[in-house]
Image 1: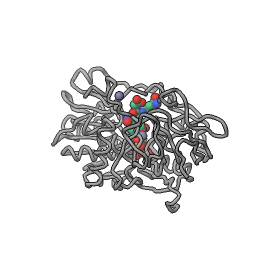
Image 2: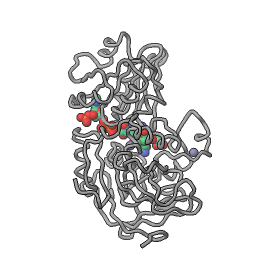
Image 3: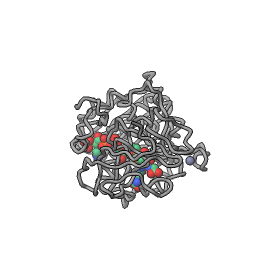
Image 4: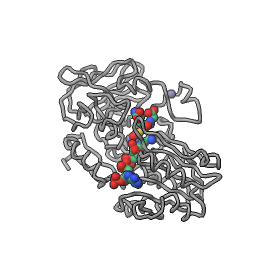
Length: 383
Ligand SMILES: NC(=O)C1=CN([C@@H]2O[C@H](COP(=O)(O)OP(=O)(O)OC[C@H]3O[C@@H](n4cnc5c(N)ncnc54)[C@H](OP(=O)(O)O)[C@@H]3O)[C@@H](O)[C@H]2O)C=CC1
Ligand SMILES: N[C@@H](CCC(=O)N[C@@H](CSC=O)C(=O)NCC(=O)O)C(=O)O
Ligand SMILES: [Zn+2]
Ligand SMILES: [Zn+2]
């Protein structure tokens, strides 16, 4: 029977408070309003940013909330005025939308569409209201996506149609981590052929930076992590050398400057640690080195370095979603995956049932995973 125009009762993982386990609840999801889309989420991955907000580190964190922002699914229904997707389309929600009208969308210099950023940061839909409730209590939205639910509602500018031939349990990774790292190298840093690069943090984002540096033709791609188990994995993602700061007697900056005749052309921080952000900058080559911050650090965390580092020609910059203009780019990244130009399967270390989401978060924190994909598809056998 059609659910169009009706409230859907479904399963979701609700974060009732910071630092608390998620609770699998039966929730109500209201129909999409004007310029909104309701999506049946079939697969979602966990990103460290979900853990960052759940851990209470996010100054925009509000509770109770439906987290999740790295998902894929099928359009169940659309509100008035929606023209970019239709019922039955395979889609990926976009936590950085693309309205094509705001001055940010009109600038070639950024992907940071601001059309709905304020309500999105408040955990509500663009018109200031919410579509989720549980036992009569309204729940907040998250990053404009809320993929930890069998059904979610997003703004039409926050969802993009993708090729139906692409497996949703793989391309859900194109909702965040992989495009972020890949684009950090290609779009934000603009790594050139023959460059020397170093990446702090060999999680999914850092590994994707390796793929971007490799695609750009970098001559050296040095992986830096305190977990040596990540080094073997890194070889599959373009990394040519590895350094564990814990095994060094000198500061990591000095080690890398000595290894590379004065420093790296490009460095990337993919951890969210202000100390490693400083190390990544100070490992750059005088005169031209560029360091890109990808990692997310909480309110109150500040970066510091001697101004002399910048005066002598180093550049410190950052990236959100790898600089990709989302609507324009995500479908193309799906096509790159389908044409085997971009790896995705290799990022998935665990496939689990949605009901095991708390166990998945514990695995995430264990350092024993790259990406965990959760299945919300009842037809999918339990893993
Ligand atoms: N800017 C953006 O648009 C985006 C930002 N992010 C952010 O990027 C960061 C990385 O995300 P993700 O790859 O999912 O996270 P992961 O935790 O999977 O990766 C971080 C890696 O860094 C390692 N690490 C931790 N501390 C250190 C240290 N002091 N020195 C060297 N290595 C260290 C971790 O090891 P171990 O596992 O043993 O702890 C892990 O291997 C997070 O901060 C996330 O919030 C994510 C997506 C988009
Ligand atoms: N609410 C958080 C925002 C942290 C942050 O920097 N988020 C990234 C994406 S991280 C995805 O896994 C981002 O794209 N930021 C751009 C934006 O407009 O928020 C905080 O305040 O710390
Ligand atoms: Zn993310
Ligand atoms: Zn815009």
